[in-house]
Length: 105
View 1 (cartoon, rainbow, N blue to C red):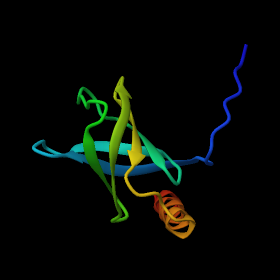
View 2 (view 1 turned 135 degrees about the vertical axis):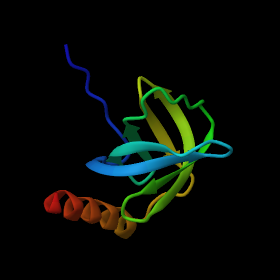
View 3 (view 1 turned 180 degrees about the horizontal axis):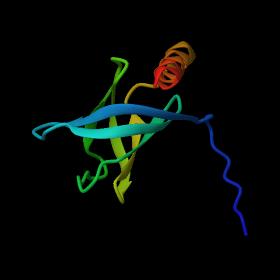
């Protein structure tokens, strides 16, 4: 049986190499796989552990830095609540940058 989940903001699927930084720790390479105006989902964290509530910064391959807080983390993936919501033009810019990178690859 499937469950319908209604979300407040549209999510966009991406495949953007990034790095997740946390104070006092070496940056963790990761992959930004989903983005909305208020949050992000990342994967490919491997064995790196992040705690709920931990402040982080996500540095994307297109040069954008997104500050936020870990909302959940397990199995090499994590959800980040952005500290500052993205305006729609900024969100569109990130999506377009990802499409350009993917088209070149």
